[in-house]
Length: 138
Length: 147
Image 1 (cartoon, each protein chain N blue to C red):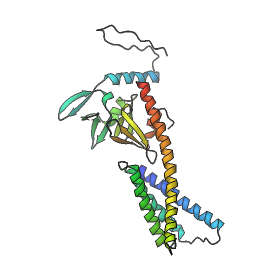
Image 2 (cartoon, helix red, strand yellow):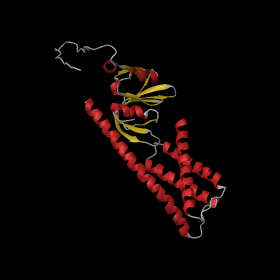
Image 3 (tube, one colour):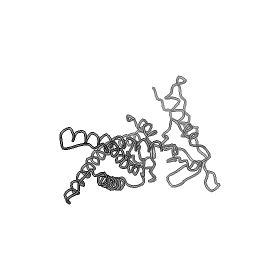
Image 4 (cartoon, rainbow over the protein chains, first blue to last red):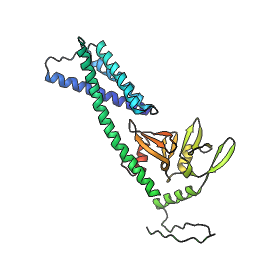
């Protein structure tokens, strides 16, 4: 339980920091970007809502690809609905929906590639060490 | 350290003599491992008692205050508590994987990293067990990797 709480809090702080940094960078480079006061509570709310689905990764009996797909769908729907409710995005054309989908999917693709590469490397290292340990014992 | 192996004549009991300074941690570990390897554990199933060697046990799991020993094809209950087994089997290939499991490293088929610094081990019989964040460094240390 403590472990799960720590994991969710870590995701929450990462998501909050990332959103604040992105808004900070955008407002620094573009005068048209203004930050409403409501963002102060909306950002932690969205960060909390998008952190909770991370608990799916604790269901280790479900294949990782399925957990990743489920997480992607839940987070996408959460971001989409939050943006709609808090009026963060304006959806006038199909292109607006498509842009948002591409943005979220791109972030996911990068996270997936980074995560997959790192896990593959770690997995190879662990199994190589396990194999050599067994060979020594034999 | 010098290692001498002498031929044992047929019919004579095999014997290990250690010539060492007392208190050497590596020697203590070696003695423990040798003792455990020759010791048998009493397990039971359907009110029948059996003797099994720790080396044949894949893992121990505690479920509802009962401890079970998982072998390749059988599951037996054991009277000892998990912490007692951990103590008894220290210095061997057994390591604590979580609050509820004690795993024999020599029966692990493969290891997969999981989220939040946990590890998922697949045993030779296909059972999968989670090594929690707290205990993952111990497995890495046993494998000679940086934790």
